[in-house]
Image 1 (cartoon, rainbow, N blue to C red):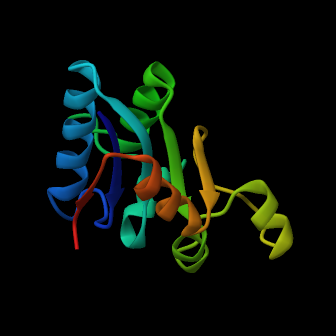
Image 2: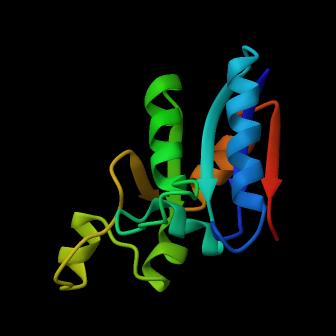
Length: 130
């Protein structure tokens, strides 16, 4: 079965991000396919290369990067939500004349069309957060 996940809540602010990660890991380990994880609203903070949680906390950015690398999962961040919250890749940093980019490696910035595509391609689109 092919799944996609949409996450709306910020990491470290609710259980949604952790639940989404654990759900993704469980379904991949059980042989299912995860087509895409789409980070929307405050969930985009999971894609920041500047996130530095304490050592005894989960590092969601690294967790998602490792999961994507191991299972070839597409990690997409909503461009409108990202720009609004100061998350930029190199291209957007140059476009808006910002001095730095902070999108973590393994994540891609794109539009809501990627969420629609995920819903069309996948058998199930599971959302976490509100």
